Length: 237
Image (tube, rainbow, N blue to C red; front, side, top):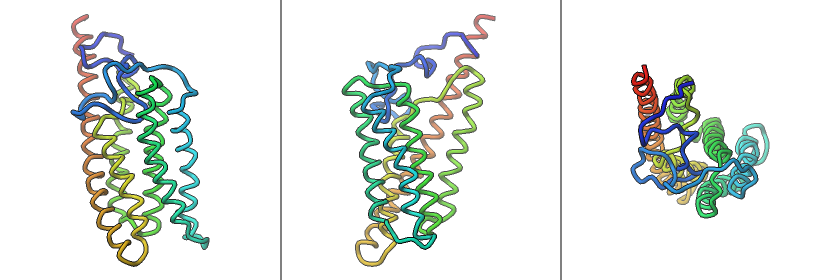
């Protein structure tokens, strides 16, 4: 693991104190999430962390509700919609509370994006299985996750862990969290379903574009961090 110091603005993720549990104040979308004065702690039992954990518990419940009709069970789309809406709200709330109450924690930095990804993946599985979402849309989003996952060994080899979520990534997640309930609501007939489909796809396209944009920014950030380490090591050679 590299131990050389890095230039200002390229500190290692584990040494930085400017990331949040689930939100961001970085208006550029190119830096780390959170404010400059945020303090990262090792606390586990915090309100934001409990909210993130509750979201994780909701993932299998949501998946069961959305897939049960495919196996002969009754439709519970309204309950599935409620779970998605609550998840989206708590995703916003945990980051806000973490900043306001100074409860930004390392555990939260893992729990929050994990809950986001699990909800996105479980929703993709459910909507694709029910033919609400085309397979190619699911493939686009899954490919982005594979792209990000491929960066982890590269970062780890140079002494870095997971990078904090950036502003663009959170914006992408929020768009997808709006899109999925609307697309699920569109799986019926009537004017409401038509409107839900229109707005749902609008949010979906924005979400997909931002999701990939955030992935590219993540890769650029990873490259800069590693380049800074190599430059510092060369200076000591």
